[in-house]
Image 1 (cartoon, rainbow, N blue to C red):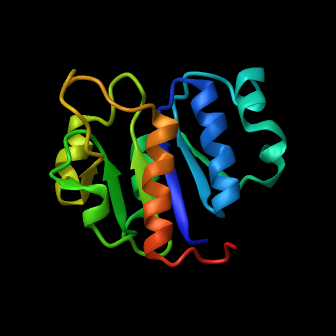
Image 2: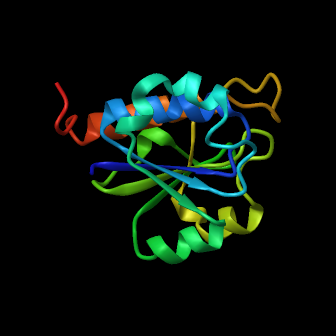
Length: 156
């Protein structure tokens, strides 16, 4: 498994469905950290993910502390508008975890501070500093940079 995509408390079912589809097509595992802003059985999640759900490698955690406990010692890349480095300025490692926060508020401050050296960001215009790209677009941007660096393992 080359990469792990982690969504912490995702709120919009269509984003999660789109990201699930991206994970299937990139050979990545999707990790969801509760609470979720929707049920995984909702039609909007299923519709956005189409029939890709049967192929998805999915793991769900009850909370962020449980995720940290189960993945302790693994390499994290935390994508946040508060990151000091750009997403393409780091070297991605095989089997690492790329972590994204919820659509409305991002990741908790305590988490960003704990892993401050692992935070990266996607460059954006500062028209509205409090705004950011759509979550599923952000995942796609970063995952393909990581896969490019890993020479697109098992992809054609």
